[in-house]
Length: 320
Ligand SMILES: NC(=O)c1ccc[n+]([C@@H]2O[C@H](COP(=O)([O-])OP(=O)(O)OC[C@H]3O[C@@H](n4cnc5c(N)ncnc54)[C@H](OP(=O)(O)O)[C@@H]3O)[C@@H](O)[C@H]2O)c1
Image 1 (cartoon, protein in one colour):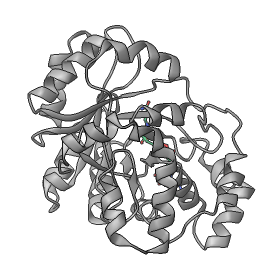
Image 2 (image 1 turned 90 degrees about the vertical axis):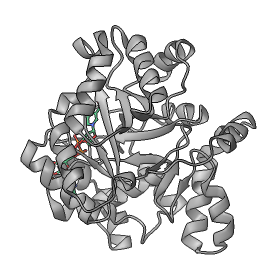
Image 3 (image 1 turned 135 degrees about the vertical axis):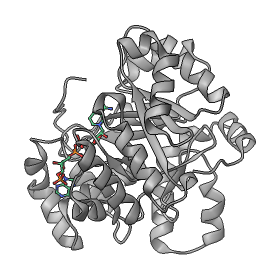
Image 4 (image 1 turned 45 degrees about the vertical axis):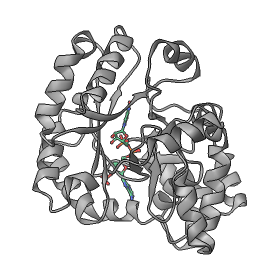
């Protein structure tokens, strides 16, 4: 994804613009829905952290644009992963989330290279894992570049806090300086972890990726991260495998879906977007992949957003 003007970002950050992200997301949503003044909307789209519901992208604090919906590849085999990424790209999706730990970086890279979509339109996220990778991060970064084989990495995250995480992050900072990685960030960092970590590093993370779904909403953590000028991305949007049936058949979500003539999955993803949370649902089913990109023909009302917010029960579906 292309780079925007860093000076503008620095200026807006200095003016405390990041503090307005939550409000701006709402404003942008309403503006896009009413399809009014496009000049205003173009101007706002240059503000970091604000979701642009016309281009389906957000401008990161690194100066790069990232799509606001895409595909997660956790637990997909090589073949499933290749086919899913191919289906995503053919359907117009441009954001892919992988990780060393998923064992499918090479399949992601192959699908990207085989696609007719120009490389610069695609945004690939991968992650370094604690342990050996954090202990020798330069090698781990080079391994990821080699496995993906797509020239550069759009975004690299640290998968979890752990021993040597500051060292690993600093290596990613060096790789940014060397042009190997465009943007960097964190995954599974919450308020306490961020308060301890951020003073030790130079580049503010562009993204934090954490568990977020209607039964585990992180309503305290999301605004904290957004107010730092960092974009939030949610994992397990449907609760993760083993939990999706309960979430997708939830009576509140199903009612709202019926009212809009869409699916429960689309309502959950749209609820995320309207909260300013980027979505990366996992799927090996091309029909689901297409459905999960089709999020812009309806808008949830304030009342519907509140009804889904009320489903929060602090129910984490994984240990990290
Ligand atoms: N940073 C981290 O620590 C972390 C942890 C976990 C996950 N992640 C990332 O987050 C992504 C999302 O999480 P996830 O894939 O584990 O779980 P998820 O997205 O909550 O759920 C995936 C499940 O939902 C189903 N599904 C997808 N779209 C659907 C639709 N439209 N209708 C009905 N069912 C649908 C999929 O089945 P089908 O295959 O049949 O579509 C799959 O069984 C991961 O793939 C990974 O990239 C990150």
